[in-house]
Length: 356
Ligand code: NCD
Image (cartoon, rainbow, N blue to C red; front, side, top):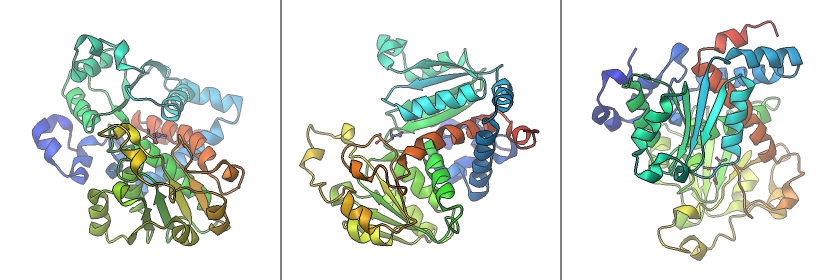
């Protein structure tokens, strides 16, 4: 088995994503460090979804909930979020609590010694002194990866879980999106052969890059990217689709795409990444919103997803439609993150085979 202790940071960081995967693996092929979507193939995704279902079921009874809560009482996790977050923070926190982990958090770098000039590397190493896992969200692409290497090569090698790295990746969001899609199509013939439409800011939305990759693990899933040309999906995402022979389309017509969609994945304009003030506001995004007209075009068993938060890209008139899955996505996020954290700590078999 390869490990991050076998390779220099320079060599590791230069590897293509898929080649990095073996260095990040823990027991049973599950990730030890969870950094990007390319660490998950279909087998792992199905195992994680099964485990999430199992945890969800066990937690229904008080005895089951107590069993889960007892599993990781001897472990502590740190949530280090230097970018705003509601769902990702709370669902990880609650996933930890479900499994009995004690948690601590820093939610604003201004309140940590970074404000005194401490480097990010020193900051993360400091956190690692106290805990057994770090769940981190940061504006810097690649920082979670670098920290994983640093910690694996330190005297306190603990796992890193990437809860959003720059404009780059958001692997656990993609896991909950896949879990939601799998559940949505469970009794309707499954996810294979479906058409997924991505709409909005596809250039800077990290959830899109991660989910687009995860979907390539399924058979004949077509991807349609609907966005204003300034915010269209970046070339690296398309390169992967070409490499894997996945069928895709670039479009600026949400209505036409909705008609053929099984799932529509809406995203917010990520204007926090604007290079000059008001840059995004100059782009005409009016045709990239999902409202009553689009809802009327969506297939009866289609679904609407959104990583949230939304602004006005999904009209509130869609909120009570049974095809609106964005509320369920949030709760699914807690179960799939609990499944991932349990797997990182080697508990998959124990939970799958317990008597509850
Ligand atoms: C996303 C994020 O932060 O990348 N939200 C989330 O994690 N649920 C998307 C967004 O902020 O628009």
